[in-house]
Length: 53
Image (cartoon, rainbow, N blue to C red; front, side, top):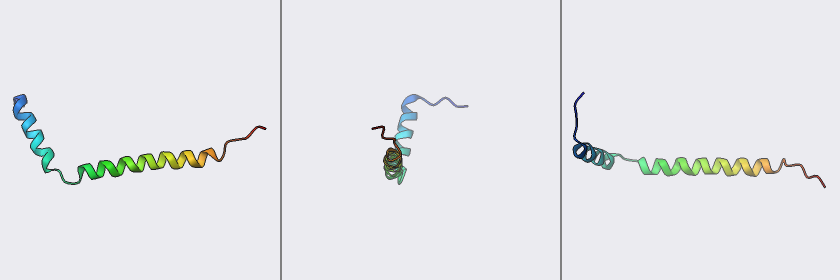
C-alpha cells in the first residue's frame, strides 16, 4: 500500500468531487423523500389516536 501525502490526497478528493454529476441532486431528492415519508406516517398514525373523553 502506498503512502500518499495528505495534501495530495485532499487535492485528489477535491478533483474527484468536482467530477461527480448528480450527487447534490440525489442527496436533496433522498432527504425530501425521507422527510415526506416521516410526515406521511405521522399524518396517518395520528388519525388512529384514541380520544378518551
